[in-house]
Image 1 (cartoon, helix red, strand yellow):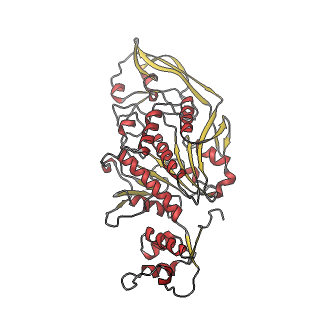
Image 2 (cartoon, one colour; image 1 turned 180 degrees about the vertical axis):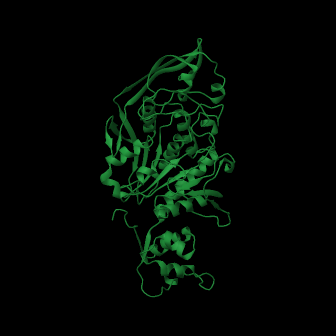
Image 3 (cartoon, helix red, strand yellow; image 1 turned 120 degrees about the vertical axis):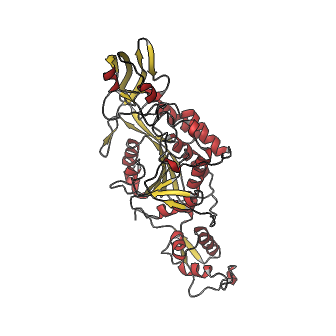
Length: 452
C-alpha cells in the first residue's frame, strides 16, 4: 500500500464527454499472484450463463465461494426490495435457429446467441418475423451482441451483424426451450472485520453472461483486493465486498440490511476495469466528499490522464441504489468506460489488458490505504511546541511545514483537509501525524460517523 506520490509526473484530468480515441497501450504487467488469481477467475467463469437467477450465476458464485469465505444472502422469487420484485429463475435447455436443416445460431455454441430471460418459443417463422426477434450490432459486425429482457417477457436470439445481413429470404425454424420457475437470487458478501463495524463497501456485478470487463473483471479485481485487505495486520474499518446481479441485487442487499445503512460509510463500484480505455472516476451524488477526493489522489498516483464525471453521468449502475434516495451512502464508481467491445462477445478474455487491470487494482489498494490513514489529529499541546525534545526537529528556516502542520492539528480537520489547506502532500501530513502520535503529542481521532 505504497502511498508515495511522484510530484514530477504530469496528471491530466479531463471532463466528459469523451470517446474511444483516448484508449491507450501499456506494457504487459508481471504475472504475479494477484494477476494469476484474477485471470483464473476470468477464464473460468467467462462463458457461464450468469444471468440474474440461473444455474450459471449460482455456479459462478459457488466457485468464488471456494476461493474466499463468502456469506450468501438469498432472496426468493417474489421478495419485495423497496419498489423491486425478485423475478423467477430462468433455465435454458436449448435454443437454436435453423434454415433448411442448417444451423444459423445455437446457444450451445455461445451463451449470447440467446437473449437473456427469453421466454420459450417453438415454431416456423418468416424472415420478417424472425428479424423482429433477432438482435444484432452494426457497430461490431463480427460480434454477437448482449440482448436481454429481464422484466418484459419476449423471445429473442442474437447474431453478428455480418451474418444478419446475409440471411436469405424464406422460412426459419426456431426452437427456444426455456422455463421460468421459483428460485433464489443470490448475493455474495466477503466481510473482513476491523476495529470498528463502520464499513467500507466495494461492489461488482457477477451477471452479464460471456462478458469480462462488464462485470466479471470487477469481481476478479475485488477478490484480489480483498485478499490483500485480509492480510493487513490492522484495519480501522470493516470491509465488505458485495458480489451481486446488477441493480436488483443491490436493492435486495440494502433492503435486507437497511438497519445497518448508517454504519456504511463509503462505497465504491468496480466497473469495466480490464480494458485499455482511460480510467474515469464517477463522483458520488454529493460530488465533493472526502471519498471523491481520496479517490482522485489514488488515481493520480497511477494514471497520467484520467476522467472525472458527475454522479450517473459517466456510467449507470448500482450506485443508484447505494447512493440513492433514502440510502445516501457516498458511492463512487471506478470505470474504464467507454470501450468498443461493450455488450458484445468481443468483451472476452482476449481483450483483457493485464497492465490496465493491475493499475486498477493498485488504485483500489491505495484508496484503502488513504481511507485508513485519513484520521483527525487532535493536538495535546498548548502554545508553541519545542520540536527537538520530541525528536521532531526540523530547520524552520529551510522548511516550516512541520510548524504549519502542528498548527492545523486541531481535531476538526482530517489528514486530507489539512493536506488541501496547506497544499502539502497527503502522505507527508499523515507521516507527521504518525510521528506526533508516537511522541504522545496528538490523538488520532476517528472521522465523524456518517450516521451520527
